Image 1 (cartoon, rainbow, N blue to C red):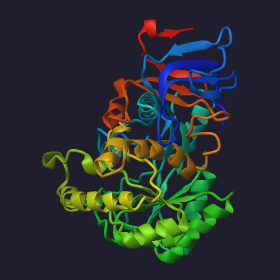
Image 2: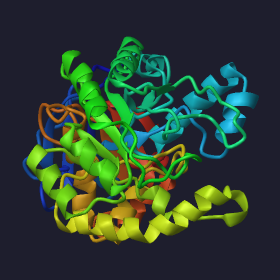
Image 3: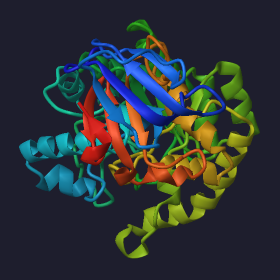
Image 4: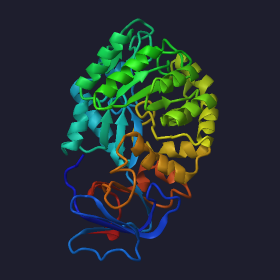
Length: 419
């Protein structure tokens, strides 16, 4: 993927966290060439002499990081309104423009790459690639597959079906194959399935199972037949987590009920856990939450924290995802604070959001690290997030965002930047 507007760039007077190493480099320099690829990233002592005419940014002692990832977003869904509002009351054109605004806010928060797992059409990915709109590099599942009455069933307790275009219902192997083919035809980069119920679906529970084992296998097979595309599984309860991993999915989304057996299976299969803790640490407002959802959240929040803390201690592959759309948009990097609260070191949380997430998305040969040859996707944070990970949680602390050498956001004072 090559984004437009790439340009040569030098960033200096920064602390450099490269997304791979265990320690930061103080007083560092990063150089990118005309194609937006890194040519140097390391100590200022020994850095190449700057080329004439190259844009130079003084980082003012901040911390330079690889562009960060959010591997579980719903950018087509607002976080401040209900699905009923979106489905029944929002003009599609207005909805499209609101989505472009969420893409911009997500990029401004430091997310230069995102994986959307339901509700974002592939045209948004293509528009970002073509430079028509500003946003993270995107992979999208387009939609979500579950069975009737499962997590992706848009039928409300009243019996009214919201008819959400991104939700596919399938109740046998043939139905799952057909649904997966529809998603792939629509331009999906991955297939998203449900192997458990969920918090936000009225007619099931996280402990309920969704697709059957043979249906999970069919989805994995269909995705694999199309260029080896991966499958992500919404899997909250233990049974759904185990079924997903045994079925061959690439990632378990949420994984709230994961236990030692699930952690062992993740390690054996080389699969990833994407915990979406932002939804667990979020405020639970009884007055604004439907009773059925409030009860589930109340019952699961502490269980989730205990189980994910144990998975962190077990050092399973953890990539970063927020469930933005359920969690607030534009505050994505608060997820790293959540991981640290459950026992992950700040440096490991940064790696989870950079090099590990890049591995999950299959782009670790070009993204997720600051080293020569890689795309210059960069984020500059004021202060030192390795000492205080909460620095990343506030978008106002993200003062520079670069995609392949092209500056997308620069909030540094004029005295701290030169051209």
